Image (tube, rainbow, N blue to C red; front, side, top):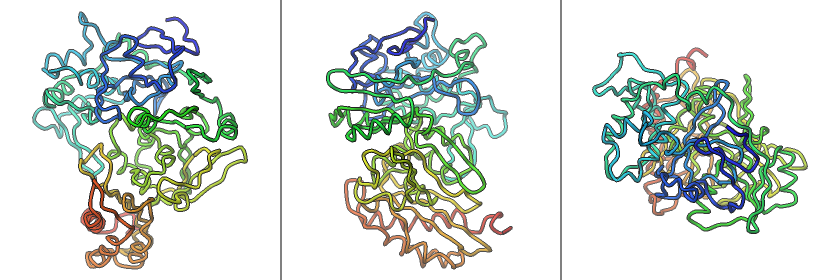
Amino acid sequence: MAAVTDNEVTVNGALRSLDGVPVHTNALDWLRSCGLTGSKEGCAEGECGACAMLVVTPAADAAGAAWTAVNSCLVPAQALRGQEIVTAEGLGTPEELHPVQEAMAVGGGSQCGYCTPGFVCSMAGEYYRRDRAPKGDEGTLAGGERTFAGGEGTLAGVGGNGFDLHALSGNLCRCTGYRPIRDAAYELGMPEGDDPLAARLRHPAPDPVPTDVTVDGARFVRPATLDEAVALLASEPEARLVAGATDWGVDVNLRGLRAPLVVAIDRLPELRAFRADDAEIELGAALTLTEVAALGNRVPLLSELLPQFASPLIRNRATLGGNLGTGSPIGDALPALLALGASVALASRDGERDVPLEEYFTGYRQTVRRDDEIIRALRFPAPRGELAAFHKIAKRRFDDISSVAVAFVLDLRGGVVADARIGLGGVAATPVRARATEQALIGRDWSLTTVREVAPVLGAEGTPLSDHRASAAYRAAMLENALRKVFARHPRPTAEAVAR
């Protein structure tokens, strides 16, 4: 393969130039303009997965790389300079189908075919997952489906071949039905030794390419360092910062927004650090939610939150920093970060300042972050065995905007609530701490009597509105029920709490 240059992308093994591609063109539209029309636009906001493609990304837990499925409708084409992608056309040919394509065809997993290329790409991403392995017979249900126990954030749907069906939860099909698609996924074996896409993963992912390109009066910049990025913001405070681009894509596709300067910060090393010790955890603001989830059960509250946050296609791009940067009161991560006692590290040319998350929001979609500042990281105390729970109330259980989100971190000692932190989303113009509820719980026995008395206090927190997602009365009722639900799941102190 020829060496890739700074203005090229490796697409299905061939180099393609991005010269002249407008700054606000997404990867989907660019690929289709190149004749790769398998990927389709269904929703243009990351809900349907018809546009899924595979991108080579750094492996989360080992040397080498991973094939990661993302929504191409949300990715700026210019952000792909120097990268490698594969579309459905690059997986196989009509004469020699890829194993995923063959399983879908044999099993009748495609009807009109509109959504099929996206399903195939998401399925291929899971097919090549590094730690996927066939399971034993124990726990196998009829049809090969496996389940595993856990809290609400733990999902069922792992096949006997190790295929996690939730890898497809961001893909919608409107005519075939999901049973043949599920069956195709569970029929897959493991990649053969001579599989070129599997062999590619033994080598590192390509480094990001520093970029500064202007097309039709709009400019796209990928700084090489944080110092370069903050210097640029100091001179161009109106620049649009982009990390996962899951909001940028919606603004461009559906709202027609065209920022004159787009600055990509998703691969800045300073924003991708992870640090943990006995006292504190620090997460780089540009770590994707999938990468955060790979940290395991070190932060139980995040382990509960992340499976309920959108879909894998979104989590493979979205970041905690982006959730903070939008300033939205319904970002799912924000109640959890409040309950964790997080602070936000803001970097500028003047240095770095640390802001408690409770003081970060000043109004609806308004924050204390200045135009010349970048969210570098989030910090919070290392969990020490507290009871943690996250409840999201939405019209759909997954991949939906929450009507109400509630995060609990309760320190139970000898059956008494020694400390409580409760974060709320969707009940005010900003995410808020449920201070009155916290004070009502502290010092009380963790008992049904306490919960019954305190639940109405939680129901009165915030200033819930009635809108197209829920009424104010419904939101208040869901807040009360959230506390009851936590107690139903955790009626006694944990063994760790009793030991203390």
